[in-house]
Structure formats: C-alpha cells, structure tokens
Image (cartoon, rainbow, N blue to C red; front, side):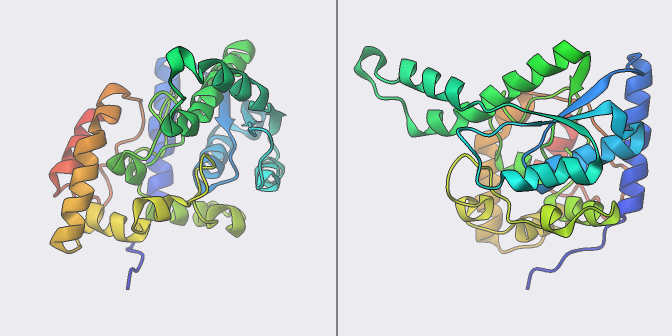
Length: 271
C-alpha cells in the first residue's frame, strides 16, 4: 500500500517564505506583481496561494488560458475566487489553430502528435510573459520535483518561469502543503491531468506519484520500478539542466534524503 510519508508543511512554508522574500529583496522586486497561469490543479493553486500569503493577494495575478475551451475551467475560476486575486482569461485557441495549420504540411510533412501536445504549453508561457512585461510582473513557475525527475514538463513551456517555489517538493509534499494552507480539497486533490491529452499524469507515466515520491525521498521500490524511473530521469534530465530557475532548496527537511544519484543531480542544478 502506498502511504504518504511524514512531511512538515509549516517548515516548508517558512523555507519558501524566507528564500522567496530574500530573492525579491536582492533584486529589488518589492513592488512587482506575480503572474501565475491558473490551470485549476494543485500546483498552480498552491503557488498562487503561497504568493498571496507571503506578499498579499493584491500582488498576485492569475491568468486562465483555455485552448478552444477547457472542460474544468470552473476549477480555475474557483482558484481565483477562493484566493480573491485578480485574473485575466485569454483563450489561446485561435493562436494554436493558426500556428498548427501553418506548420502542418510544411514540405509535405504532417505536424507530429508531440508537437500538437506541447504547443499549448509554450503558447501559454508566451502569454504569461506578455502579460507580466505589460504590468511589470514576474512569471512564476509551477513545476515540482516529482515531475522534473520524470521529465514530465514541456521545455520552455510549463518548465519556464522566473521563480519556482515548488521545484524542490514532491507531489506528496505539495498535497500536504495545500491542505496546510487551507485550500479547497477538490482543487488540491483533483486527479492530475496536464490538459494537453486525454490521459491523466499517472496513467501516462504508468505509476502513481505516491509510489514515485517514496522512491525519491525514501529509496523505496523494487529494482524494476527504480530502473524505470532512473531511465526516465536520464532521458529527460537535459530539461532541468537547460532551464535552471531560482527557488528554495529545503535543506532543513528531516525526510529530505539525498540518497539517490538522480535526486543529488536535481539538487545540484538548483544551487
């Protein structure tokens, strides 16, 4: 049975607050807004909540970016309403359709499935930076350690941003942090889906985040599973090497065991 391991969310919050405020002070970002792409899932919800709690909700801007509609758009609205933050809604569907149509068929080659899947993430990042530069803001990254270990992020899409408060936390820890922050349960614990294709994250990966996180933190799991995760990390680690974003390191965690080479490497690139 895959159980959650012990995690001190309050310690995590204080580490994020300390590192984030120090980063802003060093760069004289005291008046800048924080721009977050709001998907309605746990990561963007927790990032927006952290920014609101640490810097005040008046400095947080949520951006909803459906692509020709979004079936769970109500969850995104629930996030901005629950946090009482300002928001913009930008449907990237027309830009996506236009770009896809233009690329499709170049030199007689049909656009690939992977290109279609990842294009919305990159268009969303373009949108976030356009808004941030318009309102003197900073784009926040919403990726986490579990996804980074497996390469489950779009290069220069959702793995971009100017500050990454969750990059050193596993999914298991983010869920507990979201509960500690008092966020709506249905947003924090909804089935993780990237919105780019019909499968859930765990269906596409072939294993649960709980199982993955116990391997990352506690080195638990059978050899076959460990080899599978190690293979995913080796295949995709160029993403975390290429895009290095400031964020807290969480050296204070009692359960932050850097036993695995893959975790050591992720820790090293965050320095």
